[in-house]
Length: 140
Image (cartoon, rainbow, N blue to C red; front, top):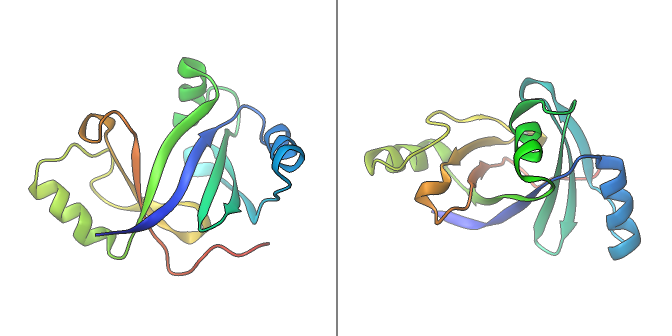
């Protein structure tokens, strides 16, 4: 089932500014920064203990789900992500239970992960991401 919290997703309007704030306030630096053009998002992963903070910026204002989220709700908490060993099996189980999913088939996520989202209606109004990784994220 769930192995651990993989990351906490936070939507930001300006990734560089957010990284500067995290560096100034907490003394932390990103392990990795990458862009996923297919979903119009640029992201940075910051390790805090065993958990990652994932800062998410749309590639252009209003673009993709992160851009729409920022337009509707502003910056802040976007989603909770849990690590799973076998995403395909987990999705089959959730589909069998009629759990509402945004992704019935895994898609590509940050750092070569496979991901799928559960609709907030099924998880007490928290957008939930399931993440399968082959390895831990390492610095660039």
